[in-house]
Image 1 (cartoon, rainbow, N blue to C red):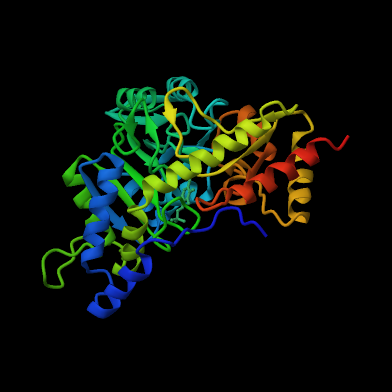
Image 2: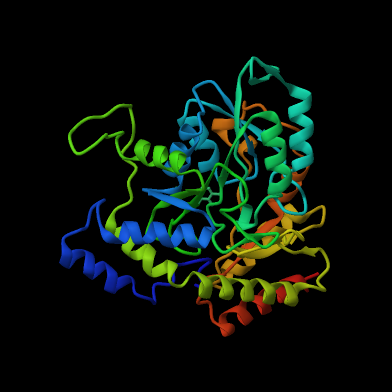
Length: 383
Ligand SMILES: *Cc1c(COP(=O)(O)O)cnc(C)c1O
């Protein structure tokens, strides 16, 4: 089976893990954690970074750090991995689900502006939804690592008095108008280092930001709210720390970030080129404002029967020992979020069932990719 997307552990991973074991620093204190945070901050273009046990836990603590409280609404695109919505729920808040923009598959800034104006008012300095709930933050998701239109989103957020926490889980290496993904005006930007991301720590997460106090507060919340060397804790907090073992793998992976992103962009470009003339085949997004880090590659079957065709194509590929999968099922179709407040969803509803992701590990060989391309093209010729 040619896998969809598996880690490439050909660098210093084993060497650094051995260093951890020989030093006995295997837990949440250690030199690799600090080194990893510096590398992530530099790659993200941000002044400060704090690591965490996972992307989901980082997102939870980031939302708490910017002031999300129980009962609040947090604006979130429906087309995302469920961790984005779950992190909001973990705060006791409720996701307010928005449709995405067709070109970028990210939060639609026009819709955002329009809905905030239509459905909220400012009362005593707080943004209140027509349901009576406070709206406290916007959580843009950088789908496939492609940055959302952040200049527009941040402008709207600031005018509305809302915090911005980005789910940039797979966005390391991506840029927006030439700026790196952690330097786009959000209060905090989260990255995931889960095994299926472009760089992995086995599991893990991090946030970056330019406000040192805010990043320090995030760290405080993820490290049991401890003050000083004694057992003094000033807030109910979490044990969301990354271990030195995770960070050791993470450092070895971060050393290869550029190589991995280059490889993934080449893979994406080859698929795009190979399928360009095929009737009904659309590309993954590349809005003019962004350079995608191409976390996943694939095709969109754009015809009216594309939802049926995409399932057929996936079955055809799997029969040829090629892993191909659907992409995120939107939150408004997920059992925990069926009742969440939401906008109309014309783009998400047409899009999600037509996406097919194709093998795109950074060490996918040319021969393997040629085999995938040939198999897809053979399927497309079946009458
Ligand atoms: C991977 C991913 C996450 C979750 O990160 P974990 O590290 O697995 O907790 C969150 N959001 C998005 C968009 C992701 O792709």
